[in-house]
Length: 286
Image 1: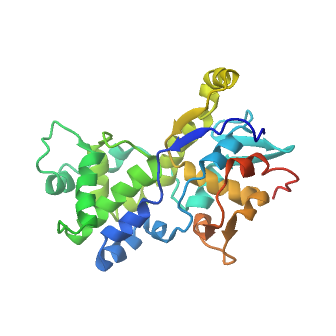
Image 2: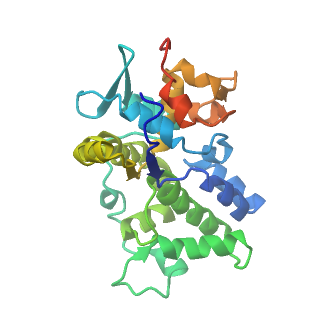
């Protein structure tokens, strides 16, 4: 890869560092409740920044493969990002039934919506921005939210902003609001790994492929390549660290075997464009 080439501008919408704001928003009692949920371990994540250039570098190495897997050819060696790697990195639950409506079909009342968003008419959807208004007030302690409801707001924020990277105008479905109301029997056992993987997989698969013609034209004109991705692309970045030892010059992994693996990593130096361009030279893949 040419170090002199124009540095691509890659925007990744999902921000796992929202956990810093979640920690700030939760009281000690609420944090204790949050830690017992299926997302609780994310409060302990250390490496919270997306390395956009590292992600872009490996995406340029993608080759054709089977459905639901992403193969990459690096210096003659093939590495994969599949459900298995996503599960090991994130620790999120996988399962066959990702249809929220099936999970909440017996719940006629939308109690969480009625409590938290009584001002929004039933004919209108609750949007992520509506959730964030409450969340921001929790952060600056200008609103007093019941402990369990505060945790549910934070779970929605982590899902929509931290994992999926949705815009503020994104509709939060009534099914999802019913799901979060019932933590033990719905939210905590819902297959979030499958749900988030399906969304993220399509983003990574199409990240460069669908933009190839446009990007090639920009290269010929000497223009910058620029694109945006949503989904939990951060998990893909962690899988790169797991698979390619050359990256370890710029990150540190704790010796103790953390589960899930994402919790073990810390950053020591940024992945600059010049570093990414020479990253795989003389590398020995794991």
